Image (cartoon, rainbow over all chains, first blue to last red; front, side, top):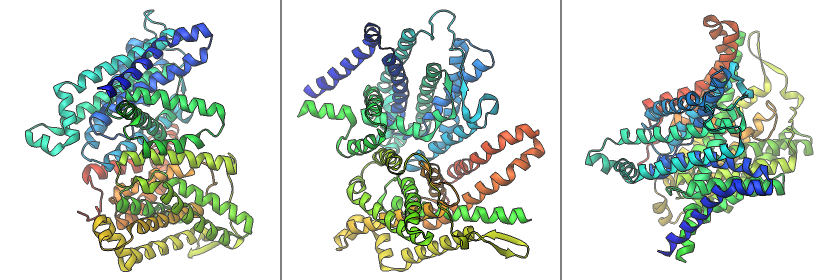
Length: 314
Length: 305
């Protein structure tokens, strides 16, 4: 039982830190740390959504960054056309992501294994090129969002602290949702499909339908992250959909611990802080980050959560 | 007519170049079951080595040969130091580890050669246009790429299908334990295969270098294309990779050349000129999606199992 307490204690500590961060930022006058952590929380949300299909569902999507772009472009395009209300922008962003996920999911789920990794990658690259071709919305150069989403005075996205808490609330809400999904009958079926698809099908579950629904839920959640990200940077460009971004998200999930509830959050925090920290020491931070990833894969099975579990046991 | 022939040859040349990259990838993928995202980095290193060695020796050919040897050695070192430990692990582990290698290589290149790109100038005898049909000239260098790549493809086919080493490689692909039990040094064999793949990637990189600039990240876009090719062709199949590479090279080149004009017939001029580049970039991904939906195992699935 001790191993459970170690990882639980670290998770609780991290969550407490995330909740109290704006207080620290205000007390110390360090505005930068709040901006940095807003980004971390949003990408943690994206990583958590990827974890739902990758960790629990066994579907290795290598094109998850596409939803970041779709959610972002939904906000940016509507803002450009004069629709500034968040009550319109966010539902559109979620719906667009869901529809995209439904279409590519229906096609991609016909394949499996490495082929699935590659076909999701190919679809994300297509989305990337479509965005690059949108001359009206900035094309390659991207689209500046001049006004953040307006929630009719309920919450002010221009206020750093309020926006941070909105992002954090979204993250915790999504994790709660994932927790409920994973422990529901639906979630158990999806996890069963990860372990043995043939057997589940023999029992009589329509495998593809369950997986597709899970895929769409995950994509919709990531679309939310995209809409928040566009508000955070006041900018959206095809670069958010580039395949290395999908790679970053995968790294966060695996680094934190695949198939664990809070692993992706841990992974996002560690990955992005490490990136920030190393880039302050040296301009050539990737020179250290790259081999570090390799070492984590070779020696740190199960990611941070797995290591914490072993530390508790050992 | 002139344009059509020229673009056709450009497509063939690009396709053959892609084949060199895809062949190494599909060998490593099909035989060691290793997803190597860092294959594009080896392509980049080939180009950087060639540019450096050519500047040192003052000869393009000497530079190219030295670069080929250097990427071969780099590949072998990489396999023995890191990738060897990944065999038999989850594909996801491969993706993560080799993603880290890409970061490392890009940064190492920035550190050693600086952020600006390099140029690899061609010797005079390779820049002359060669008449291929009456009235039609084609650059000698691009023609040389076609010849070299076809030669390599033939050697690769003969090597894998007709030699003892090739037989061992194929046997190792179908049953690793069995061939190990028969007294074959499978570790050495895998190292050799990986080195061969690295050298092929390096060859593609150094041949492409004089056409494009040698720069950081040059391997990443083309790596995705190579993955598209081996997925279309069927993972592990060299024949599939060859046909798919030519197909993709043609579609990409011809699409870029003729799609803008075709679109202009249907759309207004401005709309066509903005839509065409995006659409021609999408074409191959669209092709891959269609192939996978119709034949989820690729066009020529390697007959393993």
